[in-house]
Length: 334
Image (cartoon, helix red, strand yellow):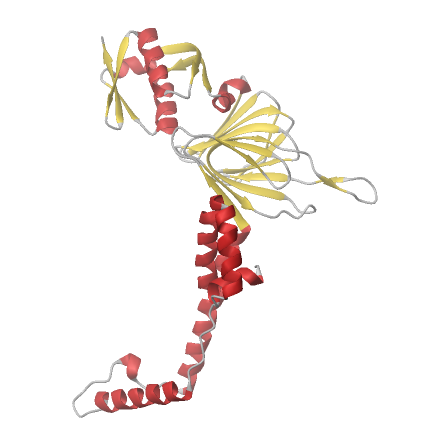
């Protein structure tokens, strides 16, 4: 949106070029942002330079010559070279305007939205425009509008897993302040709160919500004709789209959000559940040579930042070999 920046990119103005090149030298960390802005500026710049009279005349003569060649006896004129009727001209112009409008809309939408994605084994802390904090787990994605109107509901879209610490926001009203709703959209459900802490896991065809504090309302989208589900602290709700089933139970919220503190807390956890955790966190496929071993259970706390430490602890606990083979972990009896 900076006029000097646009002149530098689109008109190669010497003064602006010197200014922005010096600015880049002082801020080398902004090089990636500048490259993205350069590409966007090129996309939304539809204006074409005017042709000189001689260039226009030469272009017209070339068109006439090509038309005569195409109209020679026995020569079929391709569709693109045929003269347009009046309505075809209108349709073509409308199509160009529509395409330009769509391009502008998509670019504007991209500029107005923030998107964060984590790799396997990575976590990331994100501060939202309302100062709420989101901790994004490995192999997850969060999207939201870059600018939030303080008087309208707050919304984010999650794929994967995240822990939310949502601040209460309100707008003054004549009778009493009105609290502004905060919504987390997932594939199966919408999590509606005004200010609370909770964990959301949206993976493997089901969505799990664990409430640490405050109150939560879940609007189930994947199962029709289901009333909203209300949660209290210490409750876990799971929605399975494939099984069309909703379950609610009590649990220790810290177990489900321990990943954000770089540890795994296991409470009577099966090895099959540990294997799922390894696959979702590190992107490694886990195979059991003996399927019966998958039902053995573990209790304890293990650091999560190093997969080798985790495997060594599991190997010692269960007297099993955890062997890495490319992108797989094979569990063998000793």
